[in-house]
Structures are given as structure tokens and as C-alpha cells.
Amino acid sequence: MQKIDPKNNSIENTLQTTSIDEVIKNYQYYLLRRGLSKRTTQEYVSDINRFINFADLKKIDDLEFFINRTKDYIVYLKLEKNNTNRGINRKISSFRSFLKFLWKENYVSNNYSDLLETMKTPKSLPKAISLQELKEIISGIKFVFSKTNKKYEKFIHL
Image (cartoon, rainbow, N blue to C red):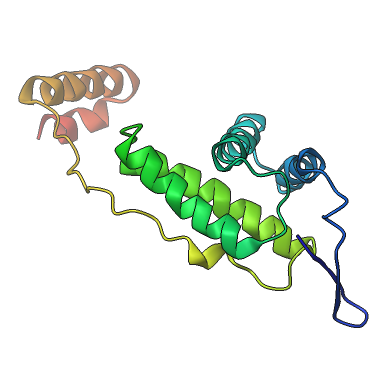
């Protein structure tokens, strides 16, 4: 990984001496600074760690390789692990967030997060409530308003 020197736009190889663990720890702090919940932060970091183990990465110095291995990992999750598209999309969100972190913290000169596309997820219609459930709701409303104000009783009855 390379870090950009904003003063003269030259590239310095800072991450070749930085361990992956240190980069991940910085990513975790970045997520917490952004206000993500502790659980979301843990899940995102866990996603990145699982990917690093899958890809057997020792350092993150070649973003093209990183992105290609990410795409391989997505296929692996779908075909080998039978993950749903929704579950895979959450992991893609983790990868995008990580790539944005690398860019915002000046480890890379470009935002590569748009190179990862989300998977199509099926759209489901909302589930309708049953007639019995509707009657129970109306009964509850009638009871509440009949006890509080009589002027609403005719309105509720209608």
C-alpha cells in the first residue's frame, strides 16, 4: 500500500513497513470515529479479517490484486458458502468502507470503492395483516378512545 504525501503528490511506501494488523486497527478507529455502532464496527473488521485470511494477504500494497481477490472472495461466498446476496452485499459494504478509509487516510490517491458492485437482491412485497388482526387493532382503538373522550366514539365507529 502506498501513502500519498499531500504536499508534493509524491508516493511514499509507508504501508510496506506497516503490518496489516496495524492498518486494520486504524480502520477500526476510523469506523468508531464515524459513529458506527460497536457491533457494526466489529462486523466490518471481522469481514476484512476473514477476507485477508482467505486471500492469504501479508501486505496490502497492490490494490488491483486486492480488488481482484475481493471479487474472487465474493464468488467464493456465493458458490462455496451459499451466502445470500443480501449477506454478500453487507460484506461488500465492508470492503467499500475499507477502501474509502484507505483513500481518506491518504494511503491511496484514488477512491477505489466504486469498483465493487453490489449484488441484486430480490424485492419482496410487504406482508398484509389479516382481517382478524385489523379487527383487534380497531377494537383497541375503540377501547382507548371510548375511555378518554366521548366525542371520538362516533368517528371510531364509522
